[in-house]
Length: 565
Image 1 (tube, helix red, strand yellow):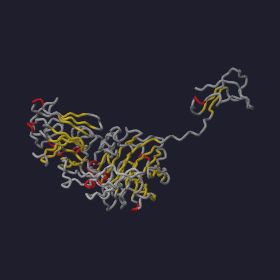
Image 2: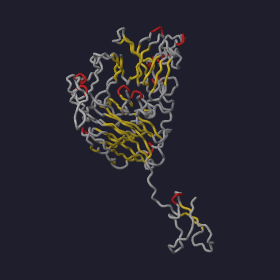
Image 3: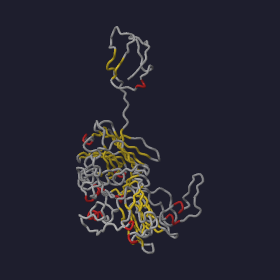
């Protein structure tokens, strides 16, 4: 029996307190932890897999406050022992992304070259092939069999020689809900095209639309039409070799929305990404909804993040940067990484709010240097933005708001908030497009209780050019470390941009005309009396009880029926 063990994630919990084979581990929360690769393992009755269960490992971990008790009769101390990937754990192979579905390929296609190999579906859009030695205990080969497979492949199955469609591989995707079928070149006795695999930009020997040279530079197989490189705009030039991945007027190194040809101008309010498992597929980079990264005008957007150091979505339905790197957009530094963002068309009038929630900031850590994590808006580059973040604040923790316009920074005094401590912190930037201002605010949530929303000073002017320009307003996540400090995890629960509720209209309408006119004489009793007001009113409120006709100079009502159109 073989399985894949999902490794831990930074910011989602660490190994148990007092872990180890002595059997004294506890269920006490422990943060921040680290991200570990997923491991392909042989399951043996005599082997412990290294994933602790404090309840079974230590009977002192009891439940039921009125009558504390353990649900196990005898403790198994080894189940307190955390074993990381490697020889200690006995894993055969490791995967850097969440890898789940596994199946055995039993068909004899390709002259039996893949028979008895294992296939695994990974969240990095890849189907992997794992070949073991004759005893099934060691690795002979591990390679990507298919790349750029749908959105988030979860599971797969392979059909044997005696099944329907022998040799085919069927892959189910958790995000799109689609099933992709891969057919072998020799299906039904066919031979498929002859392929030399030559590194030649004029050849496309697998007929998938990508040249051999393009595929080889990406590490995909030029002889397999199921193994293709990433290509956002579908122009059959891979992202790696295409200087403009969305075919607009800006190159990838200067485009803040590198995979959105409309630069956010067709994205209207509301926008909401929660990354929950039951939420609609967000699309975009890592299926998080983002269409670019905060650009410094030099680096290609794909070089500004490392997907293997992130947990995108996952079981928790959050976005985590496992290791926030040293870098910042502040001033002339412009070394910011992981500045994921999308563009949104801003309304000409009516306030709107960008909002994110940071989960347990700095949990298990002492904030250092200029570490921070939070929310940003701006033009999408590293010289024009406003941000509100949970920050180190000299190690004490706090909330910081600053803006940068043309490389010039304006910062407000930080508000002290003890970090770590809160379950989460909500961060808001409310924009008034008419006044061209942004109002920062925040709420600190602790012990399951939502805190009040607190204004961080008054409205701050921002350039009107940020709003309603040729591109949408950039809204995104930002996490920084502006000096020598170790990497740290940052986790966001959601990001959204919504229109604020319109303020109630408290100004009464004015009378613009009436018939008969004021002071008219000789008017027949049967004449209708009409009035025109300065604005439309709710017809349901115009009744005989809300509107009365009285004789001039008196309060005596005149009998009449009331109508409104």
